[in-house]
Length: 542
Image (cartoon, rainbow, N blue to C red; front, top):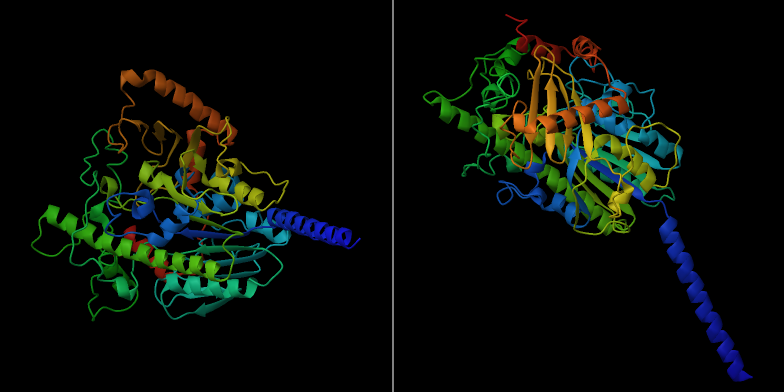
């Protein structure tokens, strides 16, 4: 009898352990994940060592690389409109510019805050939501329990001692913007970590956006070396004279402010000092030390630019490390999804450019990586075509949130699981509208497949370009008129037409030009300094 009792107790203990184990596994599986979405501004794949490239050994990004190494690194995430505000609007809504209504930065007006965005859905479904850093959409954020965003210089913000909108009140903070934004985010995480609610945190850095002002400790980091030059640094734009060859974003358009030249002490504040700062940003205004040749001056400007840009990236990397360390120290790693991306790519002297806007690879490709230990295999790499309108539906599905909201984007959760659907998109549609201010880049639309890029530049020219990405990855040979590609061109034009219809953007060129010409208003009202800059650069001030 005693033996039977012992056997019964032993069996009971085993059953309890099994039940507890099963129940624990079920809880682990059904528990809502936390989500941290980190987006830098103008961060490009060429500046991230996980993607390789010429700066990999000189300016590594070990913390950003940790996200990639412990998760999935994406090689072909593409932006639908390569400029800050419109990209952010597409990400928030899951829709192209023609549906969300936010086409341009300059004269683009304010983002319509009455429309649906994915943070609102998270908030409605019980998530605690917070936004810190850059917003740059004009209207106050909706869908966040807490926000603290840059609210000076037209919401571009300043690197040093910036003004933030803290839940509706402007507050000037002391310090470096990249560090401050992380401070705010970690303080909020500290208040959220014991909550029963899962959290969605959006952390958006100003860096490494122009004017590329490094933290003090990194100001002279690479003073003693010469940075390498991209393969296309001396692009001649042959066959692309009216497009790539007719812009104001080459090495000749850096201003005195960009080059960190010291302003004369006798200049009056206001338009006089602003005019001095921005000298160099108009045609014919070349900033360089006296006695330099054209080639020497061009290289001098590039060296100043690239060192400042990469120094700003270094601070972003440091702060990504702070977030990762916080999660580890507070046992939040396993159930937290981390996304790291940018609003588009950027030119680091590639084609002799800085800035973005073009359908060309360096600005089209967005850095993108996702870490989620419960679900994503560490060290995995994906090469499927993803676009920024796909982010919102993916985040919602990862959180187990269902919505009836219409989105043009498609969830790529199966891709994260390593099971790309057989019918996954094999091409993407691109459309850029802004002209001529800033940077004088012709409006264009196009299609990008894994092998080809076809683009139509249409505002006051009628130029088509075609690139074979396998044979010409640097996109220096426009083969649109090559008879050997006639069949490919015809097929791509049909695919482009189908995509324009699918995404409800099948308008006439007249209608597209009207969008470019329409002044939808300013992102922020009553900003005198920014108006002065615009007047100076458009020759409205003597």
